[in-house]
Image (cartoon, rainbow, N blue to C red; front, side, top):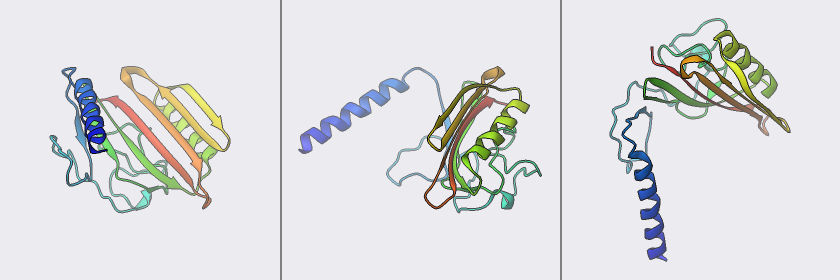
Length: 173
């Protein structure tokens, strides 16, 4: 059994390493990683890993949106008002683009969350390229100039809240 696990692990590692040999570099900031993980990049900013509401975040809060997910991020890359982060925000940069991913919960409905991000994206010049309604889950995808993209998936949870996963990218400013 150990031989199969070792062979499978080595095969997976070689596939991942081969995929990374395209000559590009990626800078990733992560708030926490397992102690055994090898991390080559320095974190680009400190991230608070404690659950908190968007209104309590000190970075770039306005009346219309929640906290920006990264310093200088576009408006569509902001936390939903009154959302609570489920995990630390992940931010990355590569080839003139920067982006990130956030997972959070909110008391708003999936329809309200998707409508909110649709309005933010369209106000920033992104056009809807994908929309999905599957049961009570909702998802949208938007794309704009200079590589700007937004994807939002919102689904109701058993406790009545909505779970949201947001990914974004935009040109570095």
